[in-house]
Image (cartoon, rainbow, N blue to C red):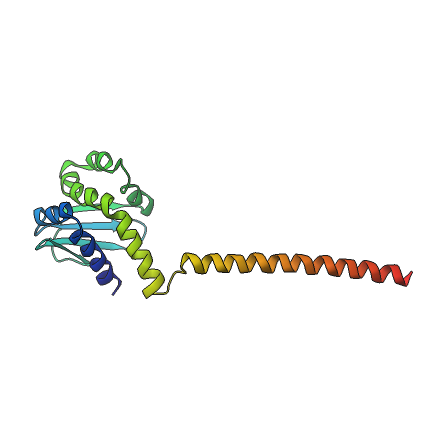
Length: 164
């Protein structure tokens, strides 16, 4: 279910960019595997008919494979990604370059859409307003507890003074 929603977000971003649409058409019929090392996560991107499909399995070999630790894969979203890929193999770099070029341009929109999904539809992550309200409540509670502690200390001191 999550893969279908991520695929929908991915294709919505492709549809919003002529460059991404052209790249998806150029990659028609190709499959790229993405493996997150140290986790059981593996994804397969398939370009078909100008759209991208996302799956957790694929019959047969992928045309290109990309794997790395979560931090290394996140680093590929940065400006030095193409050089890092070229060091690992020209064929992978050529195929993945299209994905990465588009990914850099669409990352803001994709991030926004994923955050919106997690906050609004899935209710898995609080919105910024909810988090700020919670933190303000924690601050208020901490201040109230500090005032109560100070008042109790004054009362104890007053009680000790009257018993002498």
